[in-house]
Length: 251
Length: 252
Image (cartoon, rainbow over the protein chains, first blue to last red):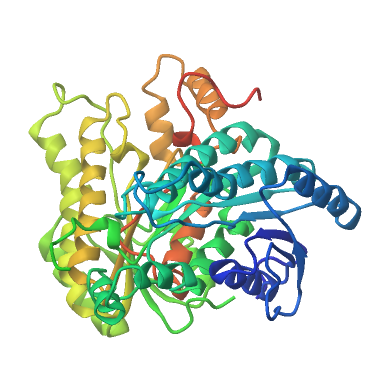
């Protein structure tokens, strides 16, 4: 059963941990997929093509969607998954670092969605899925610029849903909690004893595990599909129950 | 499509509206389904669906329901707490009987079914509660209904925290879904037709929801695809609560 057959999908950050899982799932569900990323992935799933794409350059973004307009007659699914984090407090964050986090996590989303709009409007039912985060609601220590950028993504998502819903474009954000990606491993590495920290993080989840990129791709797939045709303007937290719980001092 | 093949599901309040749509969606995906309501078996309900006349606010009825579901299914994989009622009154106008009617079904009913079925749910089981956007922001003149849905959201989180990882528990918070309950709410306004038109303009999706919209999210939450989702209250409202009430989103 293919949930996305006949659809086209453009995934920024498509070479990364979660982005790659999304591209693979989309292709499996019958979509034609472009994984857009600054880095070329080591391997590509069948049905996925890679395109070099820098979300921080408006010229590159504009050129990409000009070219895409010649390739595809519509864009059904846009996933804004490109993102970085810097593990610092405001005191240690330089202005350059702050601006870089916002350039990729927020401005890149704005530019991509802005220039994708003409193609999205040609879809009979377009779905835009932005990557917010659990950290847009609740702060992880030493992750200031990232937390702030994800809060901006959440507000941007609601604003886009309000403005472009009447044009048949749905806009939602996915807010993952802890997911096993290179980004999470880096966060662990910077925090000392990796194994005991990993176990402590697992134990604090009601589901006693952190997520996998496939867990997140499962929700992205649903939001991308016509099954979610009434879902718009929402922030979809998927975190193994972590944010349902008042945090206990167990670490 | 058989995304729920081999699974058993109990849906409370399956006579009509959202509950009925969920029953039909689960059945179409291969689940064995039981549903219940206060009246007789409704006309047109698929013969494969088990029906039981039961009141979710009655503890003895829920014991009997547990017995029947156990005999039919053994362990239960999916529990959908959908049964709900609304009374359109402020606190000052609500009687003790109104409290018992609304809180009995919407709050105590969810508690009773969860207490009965959590111990007999299969590992990896999924509980889906029907909350409401009215549990997060108040609809005028619906005091007890609003409060009962906030209870559902709170209980959803508690069950997820206390009974994970064996059981997952999430809520769906529908917005304006076109059912008899929505018509009753619009009937409260001075000009129901104008109120409906105004409400429609505040939906970025450009339409009200259908019971099938809610059933499709319930299906995702019942399936393995939502294995990492628990403790959440997922709003499905066509964008209504994402937008400010100051200005209508749509010109249409």
